[in-house]
Length: 300
Image (cartoon, rainbow, N blue to C red; front, side):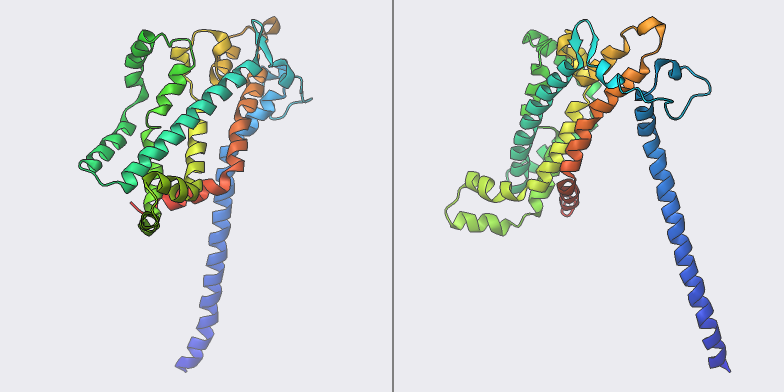
């Protein structure tokens, strides 16, 4: 009798467990889709606004899609006023971001290698001090830096935006690279030492070829940081022709619209173009980015 009851109950329990599993997955998918739509909507609104006529911007109730897409918005932004092309801002950002990123990656890689492979007195204290700089708001140092760069006559040049990246590369980048190098077996270094390689040779022939994922990750973070930098260019640059893209958007916002109409459509079109380089860089290095993040957290 007992075995008969169990044989009847078991299929019911299994069906309930299968149903609960399916319901759980459906809820998870619905939650993920809703969350994705919530994060995607601002970007969709930006693209939609960038294709609208100026009169549609002040229409009530606001429209979700443009009645007739106005692609001319993407050509008009290239001349934003005072004879300055928006391409000039792109060129300035490319120069600043490229050189600053180069300095950041090189110096952070060297410092991270030192913290990961060399044992010297006070190493842990120095590393803790390095990490502690991450909690220091950048606004605290902006005034001393401005006074220093003014003494060096670097104000209204790209030097304040580039040169500091050649001095360490930032605490987070150092931490990321150091964590990754610590996951590489020390036996590789010892084998190279036995073969007669020096520390520079180990760095160049062993560590660097195996550090592609973390360097790609650091490059993505660094590119986003330098490309979107706003406060430092605002403080250190005076000439509009030397503005970077974020300052160019700010400059565009303060230009007068035609016939008093809003020009947020042009501002949104410029914002879409300013975001494209970041999306392209992320898509190109996405595989290395995920791998670098995963491997950097394996060993503390």
